[in-house]
Image 1 (cartoon, rainbow, N blue to C red):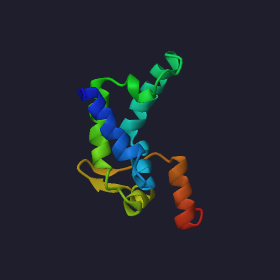
Image 2: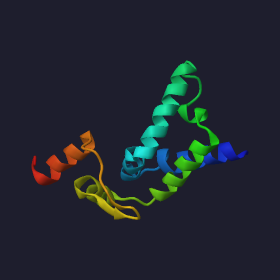
Image 3: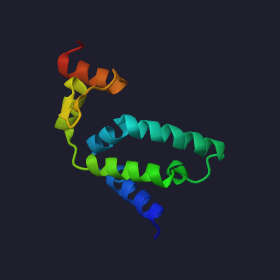
Image 4: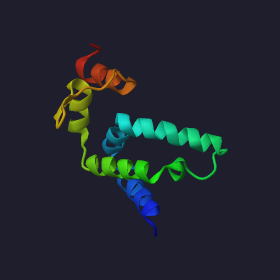
Length: 114
């Protein structure tokens, strides 16, 4: 199995095949992941939706996605709640996400519509 296939397999195993929905939410909410996926879906659409979008990733994009998949492999509900309700202290300071649909929904759920 070549490097590309190993990276794709790793991403799919850690994220898509995970039973942990919070892990998937954290991964797919990541701005870098979203940017890469936008490019992949464009390439996939341009190729008449042949194969899977991940098959159109460059080796560099796969390496980034695999690294992020590893980062989020142990994410739980508490991490996601903190991330969307107030930010998380990280290496680069507080990570503030844009007011996404998920963030608004979690705020309504936990804060009663504020």
